Image 1: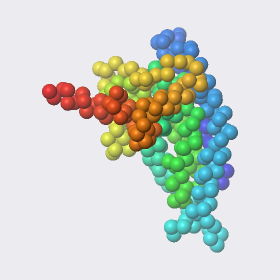
Image 2 (image 1 turned 135 degrees about the horizontal axis):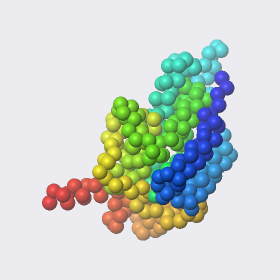
Image 3 (image 1 turned 135 degrees about the vertical axis):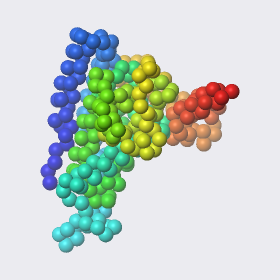
Image 4 (image 1 turned 30 degrees about the horizontal axis):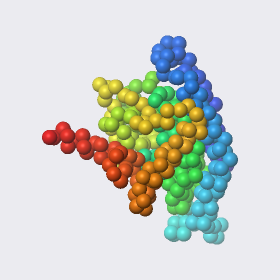
Length: 308
């Protein structure tokens, strides 16, 4: 079955919506919503991720998924059977819904681990490095996540879903994620109960300590609710966007690499190999001497301070 990634059609829409939001904000609303140098950095990163993605996606995504599918779902008597004993899944509407749900589950853990493992955070921080929240920020993507993203999704084709079905679902996920990056859409009413919405994504991009590492969901918010990372927006709180340790540069190379440089510098602070590995694979903010702290440590200290 020949299926086209929805992002092929989404990119022109992205550019059109960015232009519309930018024009509206500059003409009628918040002239500071878009800052030109920051926006040009985001646009450059977005263009680079599209080009790089096109060059390496065949190897890191399509090839990995296809090889896994073929190995775990061989043809047996003209029928594709999963090695665990059931017939591989087809293209019925209910399989599409199930694949979309499994994709959303995988996206949640992929996104959450990007915030929990510092080496992955070094790639993902690019997306959070702007102190603006707009549709331009939505295309501010790191260039290195494509190398490890398939690890979080390959199990879906292993159990029998066709790779092209999964790729379409991942494209739909990306389309939903893009349009979340605007402050002009408020509450969606009853849909707020199940969907990851625009206000929830504002929380995710906030650098306020009470908001950090929250709302990792893709289309649904159910997995945030189940695994304890969901948080509603508090309209009385003034949101600061970005990260607490920004790159302080509009240079694309600096934005892409600054956290890797920081990891290397931190690794040199200790001769203990466990410490060195923790600086790579531990949570962002971890330090062997307490000079910096993780989000959990900061929150714990705040709670202890309020109780004394």
